[in-house]
Length: 214
Image (tube, rainbow, N blue to C red; front, side, top):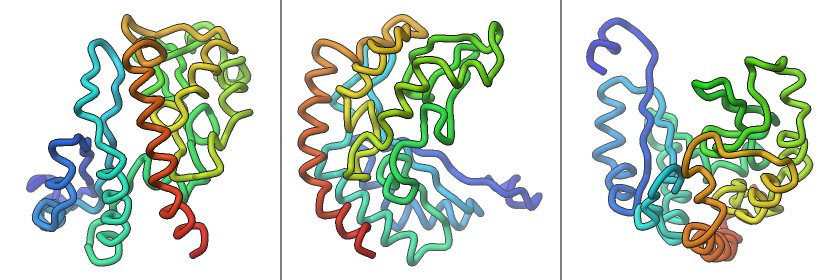
């Protein structure tokens, strides 16, 4: 960061919040440290249980997420660094931006995924044009459901509306893009996300109303 700052290069920081580090990441000390180093923005991701052997204990709790949403808004008002929260800022972008609505992901193999965290695909960019890919059943199914909830604090089909992702994958015939990608759709992980998302929908109502009424 020192070298980037010394050379006048615009840069920011990307961080991932877990149950164990979320308080530190949004502490005045950490945010001020990044600002002093010259970072102009901080891009916040929440830990998502994807891939092989996901650790569900690392996901932030609904209470932590609510605190994070309010803390992030307060920090934006008083700090010299712009903070973006990929999940808690759904109210500012009218929900999920994935699935080709504003964004999609192409992995190293050329498989076109609706999101960097949703590892499912129907087509490969090496075999079809991007225009054709974005009209396939996976992307159509995604966009037909957006926003996934009227509560825009619950934008994500992975952790906030998990049934939506399961329905999309089944309906579109999308396949996992790596071993273990489908773990998020079934068993222990699916049950955990069902419970977590239901609790978050309830906990986030007040925050959503506050932001919508501004």
